[in-house]
Length: 241
Length: 241
DNA sequence: GGATAATTGACATATATCAATTTTTTTCAA
DNA sequence: TTGAAAAAAATTGATATATGTCAATTATCC
Image (cartoon, rainbow over all chains, first blue to last red; front, side, top):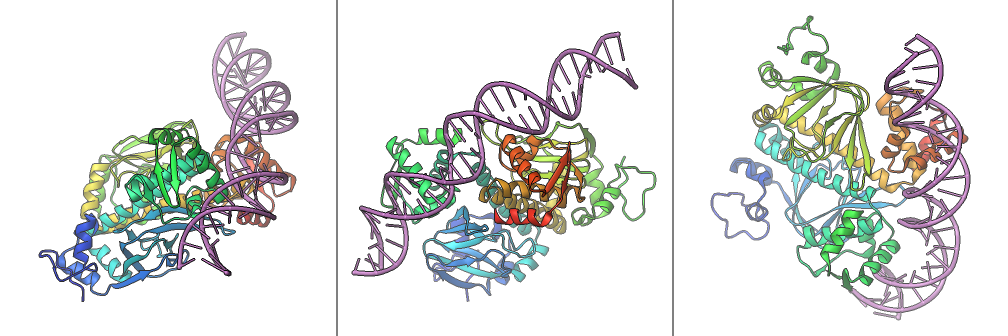
């Protein structure tokens, strides 16, 4: 069984130790649990690995699990009618996945799909609920976390509806650089089709828009490595919409 | 001072009695407070009335108030760059306004503007915070309420980005009928420009799209009274995007 | 070497923009 | 209160632009 004691380092644990995740993530959410509560919550967790393209959480289902991402990259997708899908957000390691559910009727509002190999832990949501009812701080922090997620997605969506193509492409590129890869020449695991879905347009339109940025020497790319050459201009394009 | 005792009806109170709002709204949020807590929270509330067009909460400010709407209609607006604004949601009586703030850094994510005359109570958010930290149930219910709001807005935005004009117009009309006015010939206090902003398009485009629906005998309108004549077809248009 | 992804071009369509006109609402003095 | 003037909102038309669709071609990856 998994070591969840936080007062002493658990040297024998590898990646799957909750303690390690909590230290790395520097998250307030689980820190508000006592050792006993954490043990209660995590003692029944299941470690799962997803391959690229696999679905972690499926929209409109009522799976009763809460998911901690230990490692990997995933996308939050809203599946609209007629095969249209919109990528609302990307997910890094140390994210907590509720997909809009858990708190409201457990109906998942989004699909979450692995982009790279994703290692995660599935936690029973009934246990989570029990803790939510009894531990104020925990409940506050978790819902606050959830709220932050929603606000982020809302802001991204507002930009998608307010801006023209160049602005949306700029937003996507800046998001990837600043929030996901945090590096400048960065290598994406996403296809052009994914990037287009993040920018609410067709892949052809994304390619054309991206090409224009390349012709203006604002970005550069080789295979799946993208470099932002002129961030100032790119930011201006993002701002102007 | 305002009567907040819920165990006995307060007959001498008129509209501004918290008890009355709570009974009418049938909301779980404040029911999770004890009499004493409610008294603590509400004893310093301020009653405010806004005229049509006035701003209740302004995006990007950090006003430290939590607002209960007692009566009236308001719009939640995201103010984008270059005067573009998007109406994310309408607000009825007995809504609780946080505008994305209160829980996260108190920075308001949206502007809330009165459409009709809006009567509301401003509650000090420091008192609210104190209660949030100490009353689990309350904190859970409030954040759950907030979460539901966000999910609603997200779903509306996803539809706005996924659908073409006719689908978006249909969505707006069905939303007004089913969720806001709950009547069939209904009289809106919103301008065509507002309706366009709810549908993420220019007012000219809204008018043209609406006219097509009229020509197909799906809707009808006279001044600001709108009637949905063929809801089945309108729903089909909404679904087909 | 076959599948998948990326790219390009030609074209159709959706939607915005701008300017002009009509209608409705508001204002305010008589 | 009325009713004319002013302001605001709704409508229409002509046109420009943004974006999607479809089909063909090329590059890339196991």
